[in-house]
Every structure is written in structure tokens, then in C-alpha cells.
Length: 302
Image 1 (cartoon, helix red, strand yellow):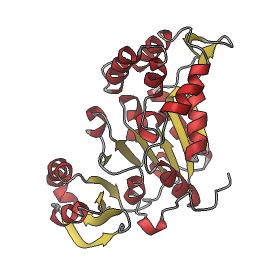
Image 2 (cartoon, helix red, strand yellow; image 1 turned 90 degrees about the vertical axis):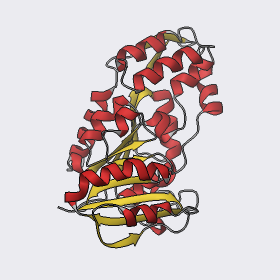
Image 3 (cartoon, helix red, strand yellow; image 1 turned 45 degrees about the vertical axis):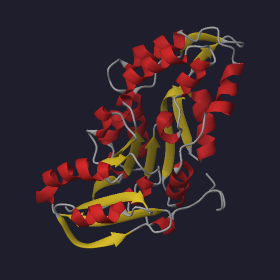
């Protein structure tokens, strides 16, 4: 089975083409996938040069601000997209932003950072942070979403293009359904899974409904969603940035680290650090002229 190296960079620098050309083990002609906004190149790789290639990419891709993926050539286009929400589909950590409404952002953010690096148990870190928000009025959730939460560039294009090509798109989060339901709708996902904040009708009680959705629940979501469609995990693409995303990233046919913590990036052969989420389409072999822009294209029915 052959491997395909895909490189993506700014069209202005065109570093993707140069890195693909110089990559150890590159064989055969290069194929250009970009040309509008992004420079994107793919080339077949000789597996015997894999170790040398990975060392090369660790240095040269970073220097050239180029994202890259190594994928098996068969079945590159996936039938399921399963993605984390916080700091992946959106540019924020919802719990950190919500904590700002309680004057506790610095304290909560410090715990979040350690948990996402894998230095703290996810469930314990989550319950600790939520307990700090006891008594926060429910109105703060709506205010937080309206004033703080924004989609990351490329999110809507990634989802719209995959759905237009028959894939199911599911948002999974160790965060909260209040936010995932809204983000899922605005990004165009088919479904979302998340935790539930408990409240008394006026304010948060400082508790999370059980069971808590964390690392294993994200993996379960991937396996359940693929099985429901008669697919296997190899037919899925999983995207995330934190330690609690690792199980689904490892299991998926294409696991992508998006502006990820080092513990996540180190375990993937698909990394987005410099461009945007649409790079995940290039990684699946889509050309840029196949991208679907939901802001100018008709909506896709469920």
C-alpha cells in the first residue's frame, strides 16, 4: 500500500509545493490541489523513506509554515467527520469564556490548559471547573455564546463539502450541549454530543450530569456513528486538539491534530497548525475547486 503526502500552505509563499518537491521518498509527479486561496500539493511516498520523511517534515514544514498529512492512498475520502468543538471548530474554550462572567477565567483556564495537555484527569478537571461556576445565572450562557464564541476559519467549508459528498458530520465535545447545539447548527453538522450543565432554572448548580462525556465517550461516538452507517473506523476522519481527543484520533482512518497540544501532534501523521480547517479536505484528496462554500451554495438537507 502506498502513502500520499499532502502539503498545504499559504498561496503567497507556495511553500507547500517546495516542501513536497524536496521531501525524502517522493516518487512520481506532484499533483496540485490548490490555486485559489491555498497552495496544496500531493505526491506519492516510498514507504522505505518514512522515518527520514517524518524527521524532514518536523523541521521543514514548521519552518515553511506548512501543514501536512501522510495518508494511505485507497479510500481517502471519508464517510464520517467527527470533530471536537473547543479550540477546534471554534476558536475558544467555552468553559474558560463562561468563567470570565464569574470573574474566574484565569483560574479556570489554567486547569483547562493542564487537562488538554494530558497533565490532569479530564473528568476531575471538568467537575472542578464547573463547581467553580455554582450560582452563575443562566443568562450568562447566552451572553457568552453571543459575545465570545466564533467559528474557526474553514469550519463551514469543511462540513459543507463533506456533507455534499455524502459524509455524516458529528460534533463531539467534553463541553456542554448548550454550546454544541448552537455551534453544530451554525457550522452545519448533522448531530452533536456533549455534556449537560445542571441548573435550578435560574442559575448553575455547579454540577455536570452523569455520565460525563470524555475521551472514551468520544471514541464510542466514532464507533457508533460508523457502525450505524455500515462503515468502519477507517472510514472516519477525527479532528481535535487536546488529550481527550486522542482515542478517537488514534482510531480514525485519518486522525488530524488541529493547532494541537504537543501530546496530540506527536501521535498523528496529519497536522494543521498554519492554515485552516479546510486543509482537512486537501488531506482527503479534494481539490480546492471541489470545496463547497455554504455562504454561496444552496443549503444541504439532512
